[in-house]
Image (cartoon, rainbow, N blue to C red):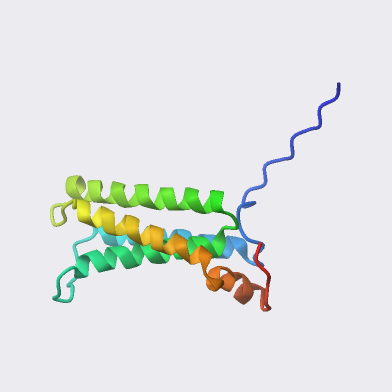
Length: 144
């Protein structure tokens, strides 16, 4: 009985068929790095209204998760990216409490991060889920 050889691992097979997938993935990774660095630096001045800090957490993680929707083709990859972002948010909150003197860990920040990830992943259910694919290819593309 002969076994068929397993197909070779192909990095990036979870990515959408973009013309420049490495560029877009690198840009996403740079955005994640920017969130990590800005989260561990001294806090910037914030507008004076209740919850402004929570909104910035929500919006940052929304943008990261919505960007993942533009990059990754299916729900398994998106859920993995989303889980990774949620864990990153929790880890950053822990790091703020233990590694910095001018930041503090807040459960509500981690919750705002998580809600941002959920909302960002929800863009997969909108007509805009393939916007980057259309822009990158320079033409209208169908969904998968």
